[in-house]
Image (tube, rainbow, N blue to C red):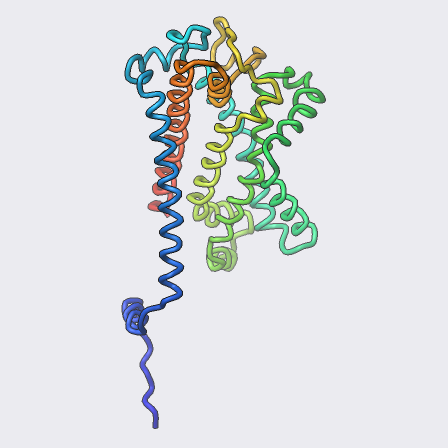
Length: 311
């Protein structure tokens, strides 16, 4: 009688057995292909950062505080990025308030309530198609709806219209990433909660959402980072590309003040100006934008790790 191989006692025995089966040539080839693709992406990123540092280091080292706290100016020696930073923060605040609740709520409905119905499939197909639409199309959408049709509510070409346009831009991404995070939650968590007498909403609120929160936070903050780097939609809805003065308006007062700008618009404006001095300002502003996005991504990683430990 043939000997019966005993089952694996634990995961370490299974891993050791897999290692003893020999080298997986196809698997190793694919692994090194992925490592090469990652290395190429990192080298490209390092080259871009180095190019921005080579152009903007003189400005950042010579007058870092003044550059960060000064407003737009036609004088190269006096120009700064504070108005662009403030505008980007205002836009990011509107995007977070509008797109995050709507996107996460839509994902919860599609994953937990809609089921595998024809309506849900049609909606998901359209959402994934919208995620691939060029950003300039969303700018035209914002111009038609938020600037013209709803101008009495948004005030026309204001930061509210710009923020709503960017919220529409990242909304499909928020929905898709939230759906993937909800799908990653094991079905046994839902079934266990329902078996103990919890309602579907109680199961989602107390068990599913806490488990999916790390993935949802990562996706939403990454979508916000993309919104802060967009310039084409803001050009269409009326962001200022030149010099403007907001007077004594505060942070929240300027939301209704009308004229606004953002860091991508500042970079776009300076890149069009002739002369190496403006090119240095462009590199410095680009580094500030990259640093702002890195800080946001780091905050997302911190929140994800915190919720993973709690869960």
